[in-house]
Length: 277
Ligand SMILES: [Zn+2]
Image (cartoon, rainbow, N blue to C red; front, top):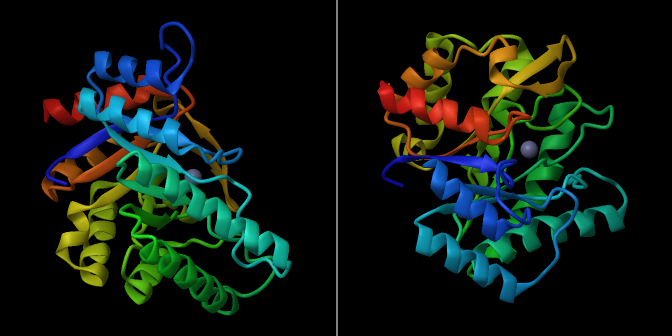
């Protein structure tokens, strides 16, 4: 990507008429935003005809599409059925987004389920590698991204998502959720700390990773156990100016999805401040 695109998480509230993806995309264009992350969080309905239509509309409007896979994924489950359905959720999300000509998909990889992170990592890696291989065989042209997670019981620390990317390679890249990062460790909320994250990504994955980022942000409420809930930015402690300045200074490209409860309000706020800098 040659710029940073600002995407809404799903269909904007202010969409006129029926709250459909088609109308949502038109509203996103009207507001001057750059695209939508399609929320398959409750499940994926495999419909290639529809997907191609969404892709066509997005293309005509010059918008970028990404997708969020269903929440019911756990690559560390010891139940065969759950593992199979996790594979299907991730791959079906990728298949639909690929049919749309979209950019990348994100998913919540796993839970530690009371086990040590070092014991969980190899299992998640082995299974994600299989998923990456299937996606490659099917020639799916979208990034598949494990998300940095906000609760300490969830697999997906910064180092885990970077390690998966480094070790599997191919079509795997991280989704860096800065709200989750802040909630998980209680820090990462100053210019220097944001810069440290980009430095770490650069060191681990190479400079080009900064040109293909998938970022999530929002305000966030948290405790010592990590994330409690997402908040609108103005109701949170998120230092947006320092964050946006850092994105500019590092020339970060790719997509930024603002997952605040007010959907388009905060996405627009971030884009306007970013552009004014
Ligand atoms: Zn997510």
